[in-house]
Length: 211
Image 1: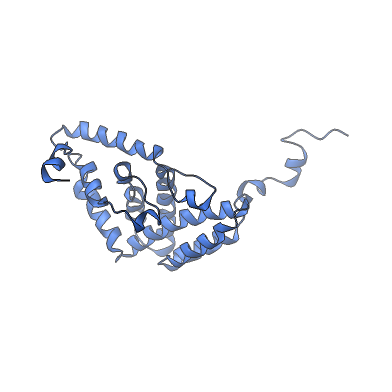
Image 2 (image 1 turned 180 degrees about the vertical axis):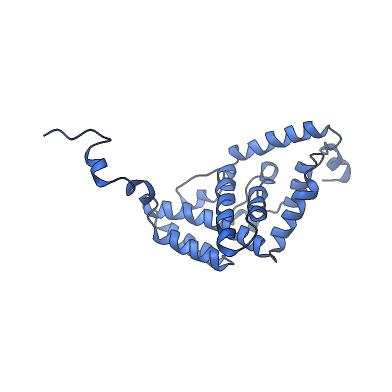
């Protein structure tokens, strides 16, 4: 793309309130942007918005465990894939053959919103991965994947085990590795299936079984 072509997509001259509205709609595109790795796994599905939400929550949790800034960690997680509203999601196979300018896509998304000075440094910090918060955010990204893979493994996809092992090897922090190990050892349905007293199931939601 030439400089002139780039100028045609720069809408930073719009009113700030309008650009914020633009960004809200752009973020909504993440609900329609699939995470493409599941094509190769054979089961499971997720969009980028779903991934970003739980990644942000995991980052907040990890930062609390590691004594890091939970809000900065969470913010990195929240914005880490916003560029995919423009670029789409590239899985590990795609990345062998394709590249994208994620930083430019994010900068264009933020132009005119008043958020550039806040969000772009978070992007650069995350990419450099030198701070504890950035490393925790990168771990949160992988741990969200591990949680999805564990669910697919529990449901019978044996290939998910190898994917979990690969994702585990990418973890950078003790807090991340500890949570990931626990996830890998926990049945994904226990939080709700084992929660009620066993008699709750026998009563069929409050109704005693007939003799």
